[in-house]
Image 1 (cartoon, rainbow, N blue to C red):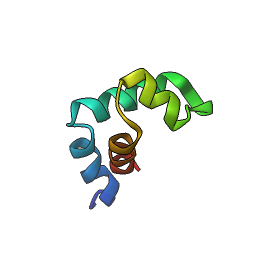
Image 2 (cartoon, helix red, strand yellow; image 1 turned 60 degrees about the horizontal axis):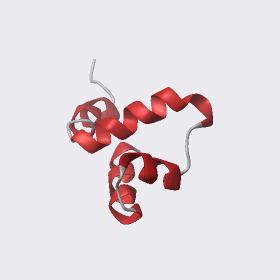
Image 3 (cartoon, rainbow, N blue to C red; image 1 turned 90 degrees about the vertical axis):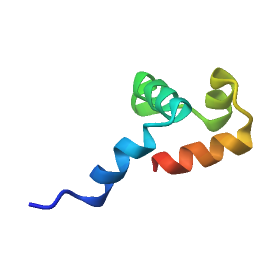
Image 4 (cartoon, helix red, strand yellow; image 1 turned 90 degrees about the horizontal axis):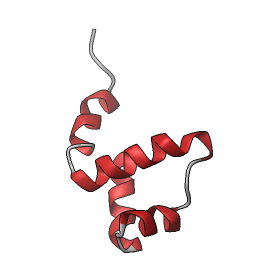
Length: 58
């Protein structure tokens, strides 16, 4: 049985320290999630690079 494509991409997306930190933050936030501005503020990352990091998690 071949795994779905996302299953192969997920480990690579989480290999980046900031992406992993954002992922953990979103897991803790739960179903309500967080807006991008709140994530950027908590991570100390400007909005533009954050958008790129978030796109890799989708």
